[in-house]
Length: 428
Ligand code: NAP
Ligand code: HSE
Image (tube, rainbow, N blue to C red):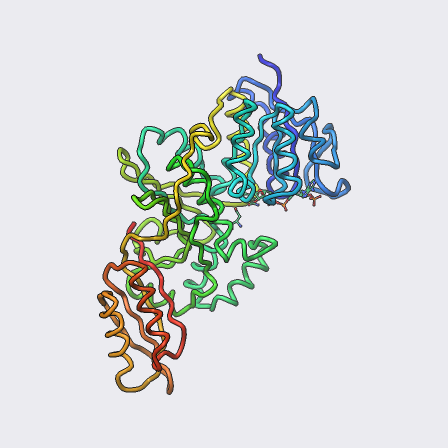
């Protein structure tokens, strides 16, 4: 048997302790599958005294993750600290310079610095693997990079933030408003330390940037993603969407168009009976469309100790077996710097607004939409109070540019009682 593969793990939080548990629990299984013994030689975290609910006996300890990354008895540096910069990036760079491969779950670091890190690693002949960074336990990086490599990918989309999907589905099942369910999610420990990473769509945007790069052979471009969070989605939006046969999801969509790479992460309406529409709670789903496969749907747990550690160990096993692939599926220096394009393809939209309850208000809004070339498919007015009438409009397919023109014109009338909300209805 070849010599053992030695891991140095930086970060012993949710994911790191999960990895330690799998290495200890499945030592024989991992050896049988990879032909090598996989062992942990040393670990690092901030607080050496903390009880982590798992034995660290027999492992070396480093206070400094860079020191861990460069130890002679470490073959793979497993980065599980998080954060786009700081110690995670410094230790990743140090590991590559010291001739180590890197396995990480850090989507923020790769979305922001993936191109530079991939070039660094590939020039040094090292690998960076990051299955756990996107959709937790779902092997979507592997699916795109390997299993679907014979396809021209036409679209990648998905629900990639479990916390947002929990909040949106819980709002629907409980009838509770956003603020109440947000507090519930907080109490359950679902939210990131900075909740805006979740509800602001940033965490999911990081993940989409990585999938786009592999799917379309482009440099990871987080800055090019149109991002909108779920904070403005109301319980009324959810009820009315359901009434019309839709569910609201924080949906990431990436596609390459003649104008460039279109990437958006925003609340969208999807048909309630579609796989995405039926996705409940903290589960993730990624839908990949390609010229030969048409559509592949991957569904599974997007976060948590077990699923994320499972993905980390999948990467470790690949490296143990000698599988070495470019970080984004093709050499980093061949990735295209495609221009980012804002969503240009026409789609139907859901519009919610409150109008002053006075004669001619609705007619004014209808005229503005008509003038902008936006055609109305369905319209409802319901449950109005003394002063305001909530109105719901579903448009036929239109461009976002035409819709924005209409929304701007509406704002300058004297009939709006609130800022209108516009959500894209995605064809899935
Ligand atoms: P976590 O529970 O907050 O754990 C972070 C760990 O990093 C802690 O053990 C912490 O040490 C250690 N750490 C932080 N700064 C350090 C430093 N300067 N030097 C040494 N150690 C340091 O985080 P997590 O949830 O496991 O997430 C880890 C990574 O996985 C992140 O990139 C995250 O985005 C990604 N991820 C997480 C999940 C998930 O479900 N949790 C899912 C997918 C991806 P102390 O314990 O001593 O404070
Ligand atoms: N905050 C993330 C989520 C964790 O809710 O999906 C997994 O990346």
